[in-house]
Image (cartoon, rainbow, N blue to C red):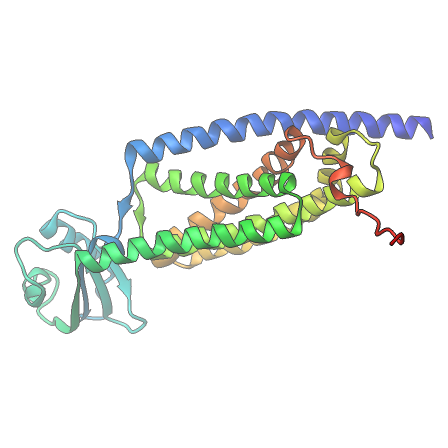
Length: 305
C-alpha cells in the first residue's frame, strides 16, 4: 500500500514539474504572440477593407488556378476564386482591378475565353468593412464578458481567472499565427476564433471542476498535488476529445478546399494550443493565487435566533 502511495506521489511530482514548465512556455508564447501582432498587424480580407465581388460564368473546362493566375497578373494582388457549386460558375473577390472596372471583367478574362458572362457584381465599401471590423471586435468582447460572468458564477475567482487566462492565451496565439503568416483575415477566421473560445472553455471547465471536487474532498492535500491529480484524472478524456475533434477539423482542412482552409487552420491550432493552456495556465494560475479548500466551504446556517 505504501509503495502504491509512493508511486502516486512520484507521478504527481513529475506531472507538477511538467505543468510548471509548460506554463512558462505558454507565457513566453503569449508574450511573443502579442509582439508579433503589434509588429506585423493583420492582412485584412475584403470583408473588412472593402472590394469587389463578381459572379461570372465561364467554360466548364476552366479551373480556379487559371482564373487566379490571369486576375493576379492584371491586378498584382491575390484574388479569391470560389466555386459557386455549378460547373463553370465562379465567385471572384478582389480589391481592385487596375486596368478594368467591374463591368469590364470580360476584358480581363479574355485570354482564357471569349465566353464570359457576368451574372452579378457588388461593391463592398470601406465604410461597411470598418463597421464589420467593429462589430466583430464587439462580438469577441461580448463573448469574453459572458464567459467571465459564467466563470465567476460557477467557480471562485481564483479558478475562474485560470480558465480566463487560458482563453486569452488561445485567442492571442491564433491571431498571432495569422499576423505572422499574413494569411487573409476575414469573417470566416473571426467565426473560428469565436468557436475556439467555446471549445477551449469546455476543457478548462472540466479540469477546474475536478480541482474543486478534490479541494472539497481532500482539504488537507497540498494545492500542487490537487491540481496535478485533477489533470491526471481528466487527461485521458481531454486527449480523446481533442484527438477526435482534430481528426474532424483535419478532414475539413484537406477536403474542404480553399474557402474553408483559413477556418480549418485556425480551429486546428486553437484546439491544440487550447489543450495545452487548459492543463498548464488553467491550473498553475489558481495555484499561484493560493486557491484553498476554505474558498469552497459552505457556511452552515445557525438555528439560534
